[in-house]
Image (cartoon, rainbow, N blue to C red; front, side, top):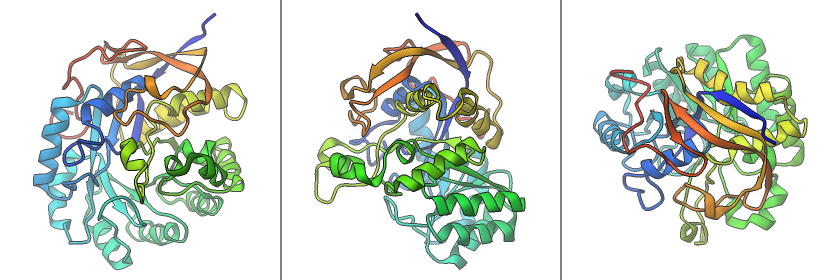
Length: 359
């Protein structure tokens, strides 16, 4: 018995698809294949894969590469750089989905820890694209001060603690233009899982306490959380088993089944799941979902997450071995079936940039 539903135009606004200088980890083709296998219409790529997307030339390099390979639609972020690159923004913004500012330690060399420098980037970034931030702990309040000062829509990525949620809920109640993203690994895993997962449970922000997890779920139930985003960040198995291992986990193929399983268990409504993976990201980034663009999902299908069946090039998941309910059986983009439940059906380059010329 199958219960099939359509989820229109799923969008993951927080991925690291690698390629370019890190093509040994994954490619734009492999990770957009993972995206359509996960039911996604579109994914947005972060700027910290070298060469970092911090100049117009670097942006053009990435746009050329992803245009040739992507099998789903996409957007890319410009990156704020501590070596002041604000003069580049006017030429970059229209072709990007937003500006990413890394305000706490992360992969790569784009950390900006000085509040005055952050303010320069807030002042320079054009109003027609939002700002997405990596901000943890007290840094959330620092960034909220900039939101008050400049009034620019800011999306807070991978929020993971009860205190961060409380600060951002208060900011929303104050009327500040902020939205909130939360990742499945911060909803389904805690710091206690690191003992079992080892390096495969290493990520930024790190896994947190059960209390933090409970508060994230409460914020989802209360409508405070806007987006479920994967922070998809593949590394090779050899890299994960090195010393020290890099931070980051893949998630494009597991986000929807995990959230649908939570819905089946009564932890969240199906309507909220659809809002957070589809309706809300479309609205936040100003997207119009094309006709006949959807994931066809069998809500009754149960299976175990299996590393050998993943499309991501890294070939592993921190959720391997977990039983889930809800399987993507087809993904359609602009009237074309791009995934049939097992295989990608379109050629490299099928995907389109949702921002910039021709969008």
